[in-house]
Amino acid sequence: MTSPRPRRRAGSAGSRTRAVILRSTERIMLEQGYAAITYRSVATEAGVTPGLVQYYFPAIGELFVAVLRAGTDRIVERMARLPEAEQPLRAIWDYAGDRTGTALLMEFMALANHRKELGPVIGEGGERVRRAQSEALTRAWSRYGLSQDDLPPAALLFLMSCIPRMMHLEESFGTFTGHAETVALVERFLDQVEPRTERQALPGGDLKS
Image 1: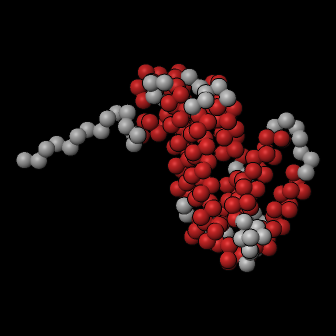
Image 2: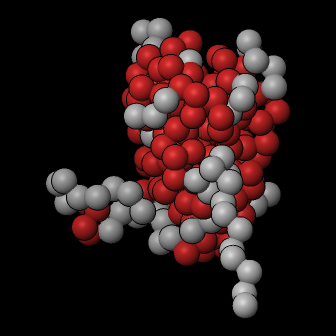
C-alpha cells in the first residue's frame, strides 16, 4: 500500500493564489504607487481576504521581496532565450524600453529608500538579468563583426539598458531634450548590426525579435 502524497502547503511558492497576489501587488504599484500597498488593497485586487494575503506574507516587506524576485525570474527566463534569437540586440533594446517594466523598477527603487532590505534584492536581480544578456551578446559579437576591445559587449549592454530608463525618469519631470536624437542614434547602430527584416520594415510590422 503506497503512502498518500503529502499535501502542498497552502502558502507554498508554487501556489496559484500566491502568484495572483504577486501580480495584483504589481498592478497596484503601477497604477497607484508603492504607498498604496496594504494587505487590504492587495486582497481586494486579488479577490481574496486580507488574512490570506498575510498568511502568505506575514510581513509586508516579504511581499515586496517576493514580487521583485518573481519578476526577476520571469525576465531571466526571457533573457535565457536570447542566444537563439535572430536579433538579440533588438530584443534587449525592446526590453529596456518597456515602460511598464521601467515604471515598476522606479517604484521599487523609490521604495528601497524606505525599506533598506530591498536594495540588495534589486541589485541581485539586476546582476542576474545583466549576466544573462551579456552571455547572449558575447556569443553574437563575432557575427556582428565587432571588436570586443573597441566596443565591449558589457559596455554596450549597460548603455542600452540605461538610456531608456533615464529617458523615462527625465520625461516624468518634463525633460525631453536629446531623447529623440539618442534613440535615433541607437536605432542607426542597430540598423547596421541587425538590419530589419523585410517584415519588420513594413508599416505596422512587428519590431520585436
